[in-house]
Image (cartoon, rainbow, N blue to C red; front, side, top):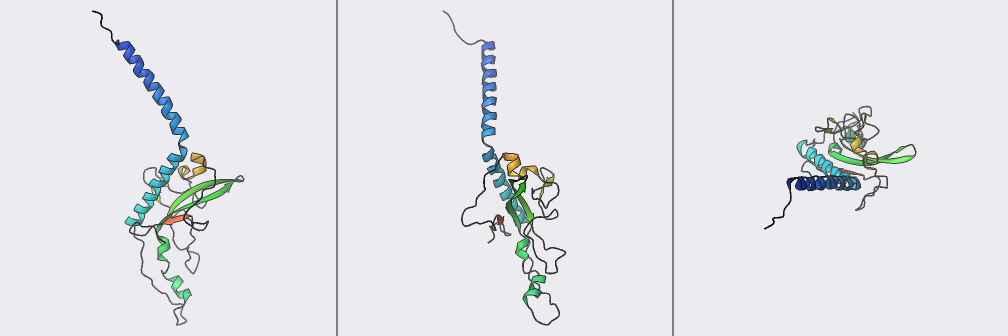
Length: 189
């Protein structure tokens, strides 16, 4: 009676061959799915922005400061905290022009009133002291030109090769390229 089977050397050879083929196939799939990786990253960062909004409640009651003329006009209200909701955590999508090409990016920040403006206006764009800090990567979460030390993973064009126009649905125009969250984690409108 003749018994047929695999020898140990044949079995090891097949395992090594399957390992090599699977690593080549996996690396090919990963390079083809840069858009999927970018999408998953953006979803994680939207959830992180929502988390920041829920843990860092920015609500302050309206305090009207009078300018001394005896009436409570709009200028008096602007100097107060009427626009407290603009301090909510938000994620801003945008693009910048570099060598004649658009680079798409996004930033996570909490807007603050400008120091040099007497009305305490909010700019709507991040600055270095307003940007969220990434505890995992130990850097700021912005690729905006106003922020020092650009975080390269937030630049969608350089990191993931996204060069096409990024569009927004549901009535979003160029002025509404941000998602702002309230203290309950709901998108703020």
